[in-house]
Length: 199
Image 1 (cartoon, helix red, strand yellow):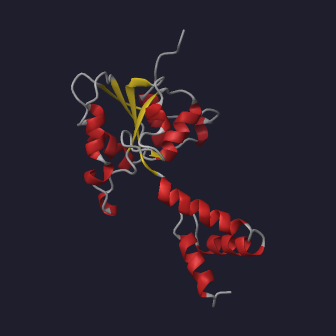
Image 2 (image 1 turned 180 degrees about the horizontal axis):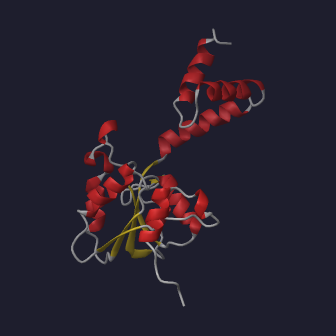
Image 3 (image 1 turned 45 degrees about the vertical axis):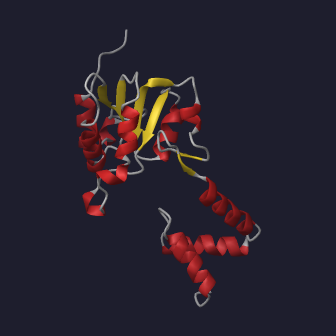
């Protein structure tokens, strides 16, 4: 099948997806062609529809199909809280936890000079516009616990107005984790970020 231009084009496109290497792209392509051929037109239509209709929320930068996403349109959210995340996937993970009821701002990345991603790529204009909205009490930086994520949080904290609290999500031992299997850095951050036991 390697001589087929259509098959080669398909596998090359699949390889551009995260986590899909040369072998995985071939397996997916073969599976679609041999077992799930009927899925291909529907998949193509869904991709086309997503390309045409999904855009960024004008307020928080999350992906949506309207001017405002469902979270920004929800009048029950705690508008005084703003959680800054790197991607819509991170937003979804926090929402699934059920532990947060405020607003979000989605950066669509993190600072990474080596990859050519600078402050202008993080939608600073939308971020500062959101920070200027009245009633904001706290900005929670929930960027990833990587060098880039930490640098991004530190950089953006400089934009938070005086009188508004800046905080960072806690990091440490995962629920059910055993200390002997936790890396040194995580264990150190868990000790530094310790808190009082609740009564």
